[in-house]
Image 1: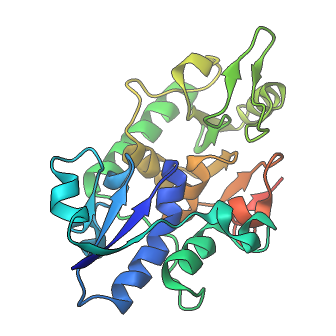
Image 2: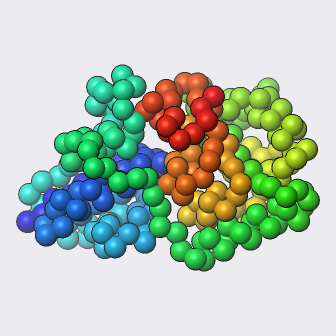
Length: 254
């Protein structure tokens, strides 16, 4: 008989759940337990404690192989935790409370990247330097998943994205001294920065962020990657709060 922990939502949430899952393994290493991740199971690669226990809901015979004999199914949801929606605790702390019932002895945010993924990051940085001829490189992710192309500009009703005019002003100023790499949807690309083609995988993007000199982002996955790989960052928030969606103890929050 086993326990199944279901991690839903975007890739940033999956990365933020890793510390709590590592802690759960530490406290339940002799038990049978699994993690079902909706679409982002590959972010757990490299963790021996997690990757052999992790499966995608699209895997063959999921119900028969995992759920039928389970004794407990945990569905952690930070948005249902009062301390989270009152902006008192972070996303990773919320997962810890939901999964482990506490926030003490919580591991740091982390990703385990392969040497190939790190080399791919260096390749993208080298391409940007070759094109823009600066010594240092900044990765910018200006838009979140809710951003839309409107007649006048790119707009995000949730206010989780950097306003387009502000983003273009940033690029104009920063590109005088830095190589700028654009991280985001192809349809929003403005041509004023370097965009890798083909677009890197999400794990490769984490490698690019790791080997860059700085990261600038919004309330989206890139800032969680930056935290997990130890990169310095500035993060702009508006429709969400810094305490629960980003990392004010580490990042420069605007």
